[in-house]
Amino acid sequence: MNKSRRFFLAGTGALALSAVAKAAMAQAQEQDFLSDVLSSPRRGNWDDTFDAQVSASGQQGKISTTQPIFSPQTIAYTQQAINDYRNLASQGGWPQVPATKKLQLGVDDPDVQVLRQRLIASGDLAREAGVSSAFDTYVDAALKRFQKRHGLPADGVTGKYTFAAMNISAQVRLGQLETNLVRLQSTTDLGQRYVLVNIPAAQIEAVDNGRVVLRHTAIVGKIDRQTPIVNSRINEIIINPYWNAPESIIRKDIIPLMRKNPNYLTDNNIHIIGPDGQEIPPTSIDWSTEDAARYRMRQDPGKINAMASIKINFPSPDGVYMHDTPSQSLFNKLMRFDSSGCVRVQNVRDLVTWILKNTPGWGRQQIEDAIKAGENHPIAVADPVPVHFLYISAWSTGPGVVQFRDDIYGRDGVDELQITSAL
Image (cartoon, rainbow, N blue to C red; front, side):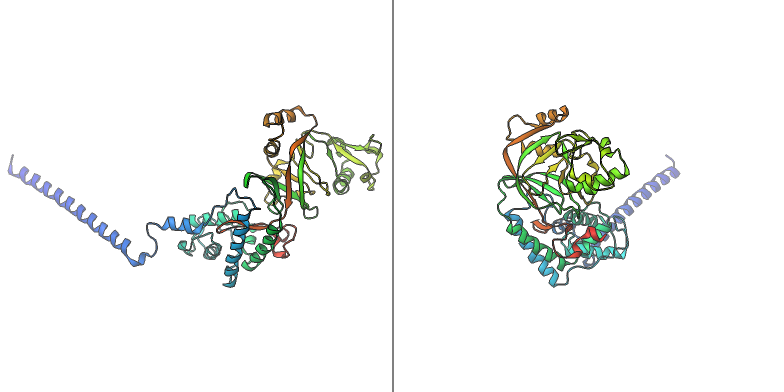
């Protein structure tokens, strides 16, 4: 090998060794730099357990639970919530969040700082998350938790209903809890197996042996046609029911509809029945008056029947009942106060199967077959199930899990709590 080639190879090797040495030195310097950063006091509380701390302290209890609204545990947790809110109110409560912008994941805005303070005050966001102006995943999770506690869609966006619920003062919420604690405490033992309709929540619980086994979304009465308080027993299920229009619906709905469309009754399979049981032609009625309210109006069973496939009967001085509906899309509404007083039940066949579980010959398949047959079929419930329509707009089911709902009928005594009416 000639001298020049030996010099070239030696030089190349030296350069390679030098490069490796420099890379190793740079890596060591980088590690030292990272160690300095991680150990620096200026790093604050952003340690390796930050995520766990935020998750644990910002969400004290699960929102979903099988604990019934009416239970000794709920009363105890509601009493604790009252103590917590009393302390919170005495310290000034929480800040008002400006309801001027849509705040959501990814937004960076000074209003997010106020939102963080508000969510920290109510226990939805951990103090460790801080009060920066960034709407990050921690704020997103905290806002969704707040929305769930208030019966709102958990979309993580500050819409008008979220702002309205958020800006009710801690003092007013304290009063709402105290009012509802009295309702919880004054309700007698509901039994081991019962159906509960909570009117402000527009929700149904089927309770068995101290535990919620089914929950159903409901539609309850309008503000001017309120669902009444009920304590009764479900004694009958009617498959493919006839619908007899209440006099109030004849006056408020059917007569005005007939004035607009003379074929309304015929189009909807509704018959006018006279005192002698004979059918009366709609053309014989003077619809410019309220004379029609003297008659009975009955709708045939079928898909367009106002009760659809099922009616749940029980003795009631107000003549109310629970039922299916052909208008399933209404269950997707945020404020489900659309009925004339009766209660519409989403997935009603699941509830009826549970009600009839001790009634021989009426399992789920038999119920489905009877509906499909299309014939009117009343079923006596072998063991009548207690049913209660009650009014609870604030309660707690666990540490830090305080539920609030719109005081739709204004029974809590504070106008501010009637969010639906205000918006």
